[in-house]
Amino acid sequence: MKKIVLASKNLDKVKEMRLVLKSLPIEILSLADFENFPDAVEDGATFEENALIKANFFREKTGLATLADDSGLEVDALGGKPGVHSARFAGYHADDKTNNQKLLDELKKIGVEESAAAYRCALAFVDTDGTKFLTEGKICGKIKIVARGTGGFGYDPYFYLDDGRTMAQLSVDEKNLISHRGAALKEMILKLRGKFS
Ligand code: IMP
Picture 1: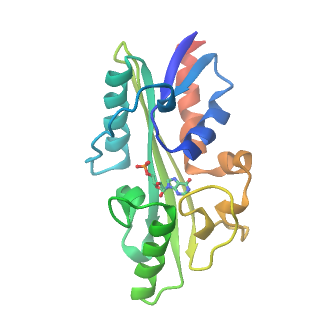
Picture 2 (picture 1 turned 90 degrees about the vertical axis):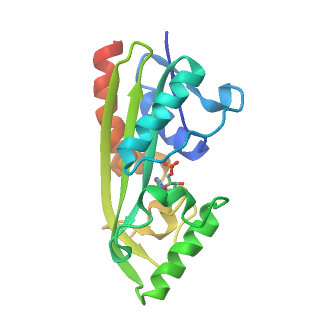
């Protein structure tokens, strides 16, 4: 069976992607199945560039077909920040807690309590035969300074949907149905199904 490596060290993302990809006739591995590789240098200017950088890097390291994701939050009131810097918004050793605090601090600085925002995701698949597929997904919503919910990860407790719930109040299945990553994965599955079934 064809093996594909999910090239993310973020276990929450791997969990979300596995659920959607399980409908394909492929064996899904993650970076946890390998030695501890260094991080790829994500110096692209866009989500697409960074997804491709990661997919190429880990395809080379693992010798297997690789699917990489790059995603992040764009907040209108902050001019699109944190964008491609979402994972390290609060600095090199940032985690979800410090990134969320930085988000609140930045909004406070400009006196904003809520702003239109979007999550964006780019997925890049690179096979050993050189095949490349790129897909994208986006979901619009609002960032508010009040946290709700304990599910999801990252900025989810502050990301409000049109129905008034936050992303952190959805189950993984519900999130995949509407999320930026779910949309990019659905498009990617069509391409992978064309190649592998
Ligand atoms: P990446 O691993 O470089 O793609 O960084 C993505 C970062 O964007 C994560 O660490 C989160 O801070 C943020 N992010 C991306 N997708 C989501 C999501 O679905 N929910 C919450 N935060 C997300």
